[in-house]
Image (cartoon, rainbow, N blue to C red; front, side):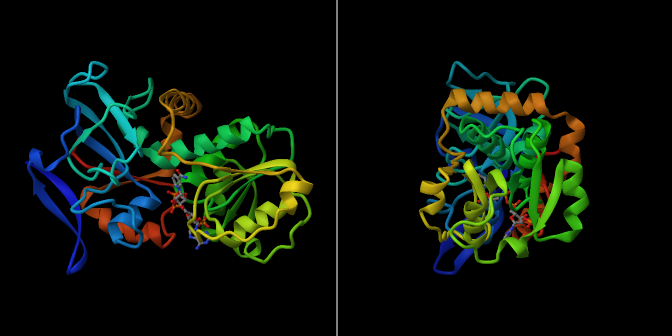
Length: 328
Ligand SMILES: NC(=O)c1ccc[n+]([C@@H]2O[C@H](COP(=O)([O-])OP(=O)(O)OC[C@H]3O[C@@H](n4cnc5c(N)ncnc54)[C@H](OP(=O)(O)O)[C@@H]3O)[C@@H](O)[C@H]2O)c1
């Protein structure tokens, strides 16, 4: 028996509760992992509260991230005792996820814990940090260089935003952060933001072409803010579109694309080749130490997931939240 947070949807509507599960309630998959930590992402907040349609079937254990130890494996790449990490790739959406003391997973997106990284730090990274790294790599591939104009990061004090700012700043980029929370300004400066712009000012409607301000951007919010970012991006600049914390809608003209040759690059952390996945984790492990992860992370108990799911969907979580699934 093991403990699981289970979401169900039936005639009584959306329900979320802790249950004791038997192993045969999990899908049959080649690698069995005892989960030590999970994390809380915006998507998990939507799944647990029922505010977004994330789960593909019911009953389902949410939790798109997990870090733990292999306890059984039919795959030769993994053996009992291996510390492993899995982010996204259908976990906690298509099949039962990290908000349980055990998961059964496919080996494709499972990785061994990177050298020098603890299980706890791996969940400070989680999907948010992995996506931040993907977004920065996408800007690099688009030719956005550190010695150009600043990079704008929206939804800055959230998980993805916080880690994106820290990565960019460590790589020598000048970073401007967009936040709706004045109390996070010092936190954002400590992460490496040199300028801070209010969310309200970025929400003002933009003309098709505004003054060029940003060499690139990492956008976590969509909607009117992304419209303004597109209009303010430099000639040959690039924007990594990661999230929709404000809105899934986008109003734009083609003018910045054809007159300034800007690129709008979609980032999807779920479908990533194994080689790219490993390369991104290696970079994250090399860039940051324990002190950095501790500074952006709050660790909560398993029981607190429903409370924090509500908070993250209301924009009230700063940085990353790690969930202690099993006592150390
Ligand atoms: N593409 C992918 O593969 C992928 C992977 C991970 C996450 N995401 C998406 O990326 C976004 C961020 O994820 P996260 O886990 O970092 O979430 P998060 O921690 O909740 O951060 C979201 C941030 O967006 C800002 N925000 C919230 N509501 C807003 C609103 N109504 N208008 C403008 N800004 C708002 C807030 O930042 P401030 O308080 O600083 O303003 C908030 O902290 C989410 O939409 C998530 O679904 C996508």
